Image (cartoon, rainbow, N blue to C red; front, side):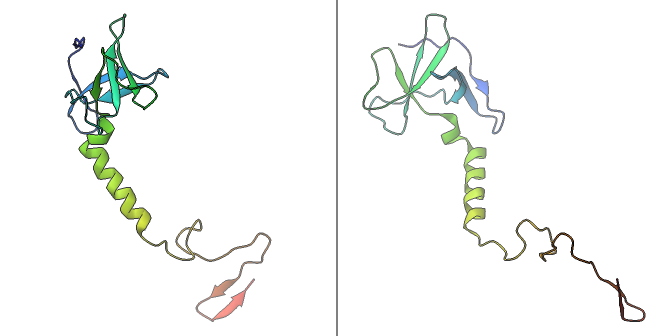
Length: 130
């Protein structure tokens, strides 16, 4: 049985409860505080408390399955409502076709080469000035 050494904190994006732990690379990671059954394949993180009472998180794999002192957890980024909403918005934006001729040139969309003479048009007399 894993002892929770810290009360759940709040997700800065959605306000839900999360536990903060450290990955094998030393990066902080938020996980959901709920426990998942050992046969749940969606919960792909192994969580345990190390000898310094820090919550440690690692990715489960076939080479390194769940150990007896670990339990399964779900990364909060996979269940965060704000992250899911942003992910869906990015996917919808990526599926829309880009407007032709405007990418990288602002609203005008026209080409302007260096050194080209710019033309000024006098609208009152309809003459082209240089």
